[in-house]
Image 1 (tube, rainbow, N blue to C red):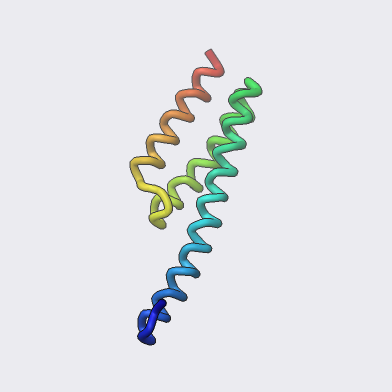
Image 2: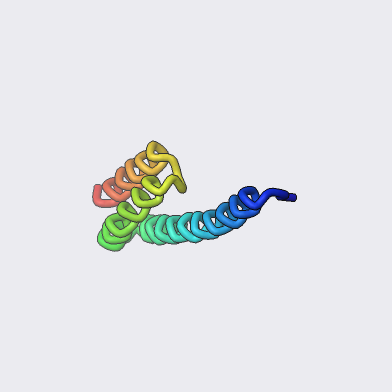
Length: 88
């Protein structure tokens, strides 16, 4: 348990930041899920639209430190390849 005033404040800050990060991570996962569902349904236009919406969300999460930048880039790359493969 935190004893000093600064440690108590740090605990409060960490709790707030955790809530924000959880919300951001959940939001990113929701966007990714819509892309996955569109890909599995085979609808290329819906998948492309969902990916276009998910990209900035993923990069925003990366810039805020919720996910690593390379992870976000990798996910976008792999999803865009799968969306592209739908048209072929």
